Image 1 (cartoon, rainbow, N blue to C red):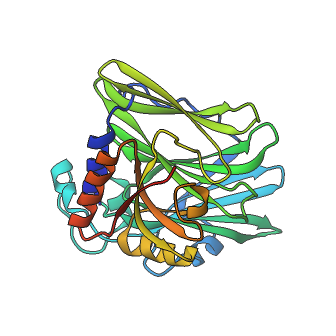
Image 2: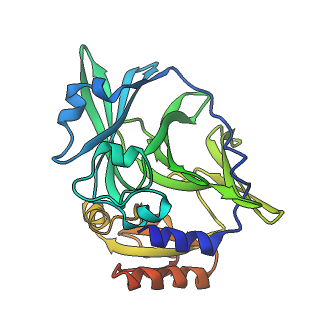
Length: 309
């Protein structure tokens, strides 16, 4: 689905800042990256057959030690890789294929969360999402930084000019419900986008400040937490892959089509309540959303356009 991601960028590139401007550094907490060879056996045993471990990281929190373990079940080699200076690959995907360049088809990734229980680890949550690149780093923030409540996991994916943050937000703690949300950043020349992830709103909640630049013209957006996600009010048109009755059905759709995020339809005032939608993308205009949907349908991916609010 990289082709659809490229379509997305061509539609919304009023983005900000050249690649020379990296994202604002996030202060490091008390964390430690665990060498893959030292990843606890308990974590490795939780992976499904065919999974590849990518990174494990521990965080010492006031509530105790937490282990985050990221892994994927690769869908295969991306044919586009040979055009990016990577030799065409075949056969089973190996870990070194993922970590040495953009050669992975969109695949199911999981971040497992473990809490220290005596001398062992107990898995308290497992979050699935879709990616096609290796992770560069895993960081942690808080939804309420001053209180250190509501953990937010920030995963940095990407290479060369374009990158992305995949955010996992746990408003009620690591064992509770979560939201997956993605923000692209990076740029080329005078066009690009960047986010700041170190600011709070008047209520003391983490918010995201985004700066988009296109040939010297700059726009700024503030995304505030609304109870479900960091709201993006300037993007009211949703490209929706499915509308189903349960989260499990939505996740099954995502696993099949290798894209999308789950959202409750009741959260958006113009959508029919009582469903879980698979949100593929969101846009400022109906024209942009329809163009994206046409690209999805061309690749045999169901997609409908709805105004959400």
